Amino acid sequence: MTDSLFLRADVEALCPGKGFDRMLMNKRDHNPKHKRAWLAAAVVSLGCQAIVANAASLQVSVVDQSGAPVPNAVVYVTPASGKVPAPKPATAIIDQVKRQFVPLVSVVQTGTAITFPNKDNFEHDVYSFSPPKKFELHLYHGVPANPVVFDKPGLVVMGCNIHDTMVAYLLVVDTPWFAKTDAAGHASIDNLPADNYRVTAWHYRLADANALPVQSMSAGADAKAAFKLKLSAPTE
Ligand SMILES: [Cu+2]
Image (tube, rainbow, N blue to C red; front, top):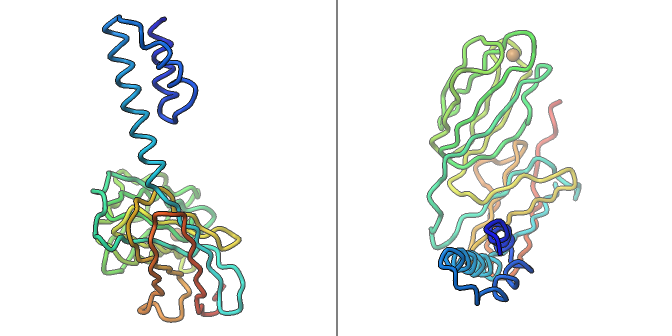
C-alpha cells in the first residue's frame, strides 16, 4: 500500500465510490500514517453523503404573458429561516465587446468584485447612477486596475458615457442561491439546504419592477417553480 494510493482514495471519497470500499478492505493495515489517511477519507466520505441527503435543487421556468420562454430572467431564493452562509469573496466579469456589454444581464451576491474589461480597440467610459452603486470608470482601454465592489443589494443599471446605446443590468442579491434563465427560459438552483424559501423572479423588461413576483417553496425534495412575467416590449 503506497501513499499515492491513499491520496487517490481520498479524492474518490469526495464522491463516495469504489475508493472508499478499498479503504475499508485495507483497514487492517496498522501503519499509523496510513490509519490517519483512512480516518480522513472516512470523514470526508460521511460529510459528502450528508450533503447528498439534505441538498435539493430547484428547477425554475419563466414565460412571458404570451407563454413564450423568457431568457435572461434572474431567479433567486432566500430562506425563510434567514440562514444564509456568510458571503465568500467572489469575482465576476462584465466585458465590453463591439459596443455592447457582455453579458447583458448579470446576477451576483452582495460583496462581489466585478471587473469591466474593454475588449474594443477604442475607449469606453462605464458608469452607473443606480443607488446601490454609483460609480464611473473614466475613459479607458483594456482592463481597469481595480474591480468595482458591489456591496449593497439591488439593481444596478450601467451605461457608457461615449456610446449611448450601451446598457447592462446587474442584480445584486443577498443570497448565494441564484441563477439566470437560458434560451428555453429554464434555470436551476442547486445545493439548497432543507428549508422553506421564497423564490423571486426578475427581468429587466418587467412592466412593474416594484412588484417582483414571489413564490414560496420548501426544499427537502427537488422542487419546481414556474413564473409568468408581464414584460414590456423590447426596445431594440
Ligand atoms: Cu462605450
